[in-house]
Length: 60
Image (cartoon, rainbow, N blue to C red; front, side, top):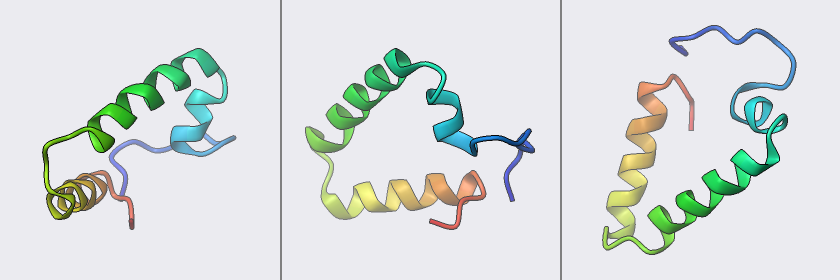
């Protein structure tokens, strides 16, 4: 279960970035660096994604 209730409209992540494309581009650039050019093993990256999703109530 999410810790913060959503107010409606576009849901979650997409709703925030839909209003600020420049912010979205910056996020995607850094996200790509983190996940594409990381020294972490792919299995560990997936475990991090799953743990993060679980902590935020996402059924990833």
